[in-house]
Image (cartoon, rainbow, N blue to C red; front, side, top):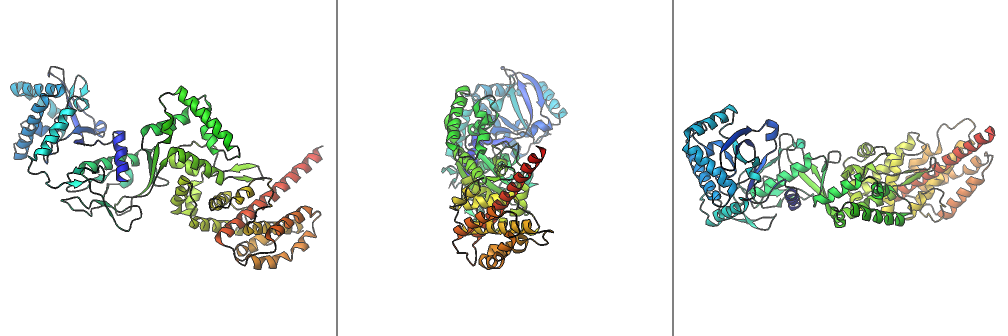
Length: 607
């Protein structure tokens, strides 16, 4: 996982491998191509929030030929500080600049300017007064700008600087450099181990900042740099260098602060291994007058016309590629990464639930999820799908219609919401703990007097059963489908209770004080045989009071054939969930029939 975040940071330019460090540049000294002083430009507070990536030597007393503290460039300018460290650093910096001037034209210009300052006390004094007027402190960084271009952005010094740093490492001339090397878990190369304190993440979620890594490590070797993560009972050793930890820190901070790369609702972070993959997604959403603009809507479709949709998608993709040549087909298969993050009160950052796959598989998983959770409400002929649960996750889909299911899901599922999302991501089975919670919530709906349980819970139940292999349940949730062949006894018993409840309602002259469903629903889910025997004796009594009983005789006959006289004493949790679906689906059919009858009656009266 560390390596993936490291690669992400490098690919986005958030961090940079090698001898670099982000520094807070306070001011730029602008020069012309001849090394003549033009102007001093101080950076504002807002500008200084964006730190500048600068080269840095691998020495213990590291210096940069591009950007250094004022007191090391001119010790006499910075309050006449003449301590040992300042003198050593100043001498090292001048030596580095001199060597760089031999290979780099841009550094040679800056070095020429330094010589002019040394030869002209008046010029030096004028510049130092200017620095003081801008309140540049001795410990703040100052850099150079040549003809409007920052020195750190020049490229002519980079090859020389890498060679310069390699020479320092090979020579081992700095007696304070660590003598022991370790094998980095990031690059597999021998590196100097991290020494001292680990970096802290300063993203908004972390308050004053929390460590990126565990402090369970050796301050000398770095061999036990670790992280308690992924549900491990103990920490995992992750030896790496100081530079690598800084890059990983920068990557995590970026993911936690960028609106496009994390979601606080789910406490997750996500990213693509290639920036172009995410660009493709954004362009796919924003493309205007092409069929490809409809791709997001097509992903939500859950009809049997999947083959035709795929053909349309392929043609639209080819159209997009033709019009947007910079987008390549292969990039849609780029990898994406998702992991959960948690910032406990004690100031630790935990990463877990790491998941990696291709965007292509992600698209397929989204479509499968929409299909699995589709329930057609026969009362209105409206297709309900749990769409925005996953749309929130990656922001890949822009939703217009659906109600926000997240708050409802979080309220009922609690911490299991992440487990549900993981099931959606990878097209896996839904954890049984979620089924327990949802089925219990259906009980509450019925006991509270709802005619039909909340469809959201029914959608989760349906998806659970389908992903457990109950393919017949898919047909049971479609409008005007025959129920023959649906062999789930739980489903059929749910239908039976819905029928009994409805004929009780229709046969009552003065209303029903306590309905059969409200009285027996929960008990029948657990002990169906006992309740069936107790309630079924009333069936003929209720049917006898109806003006027409043919429809109900047919339904009871279907149920009887499916049950074949075998009603279990107890239902498993899966059969209890199927019971919920059978009851709800049958109630929807009854209410749809009732509405149609009322409409027909009104039409006849109007005629």
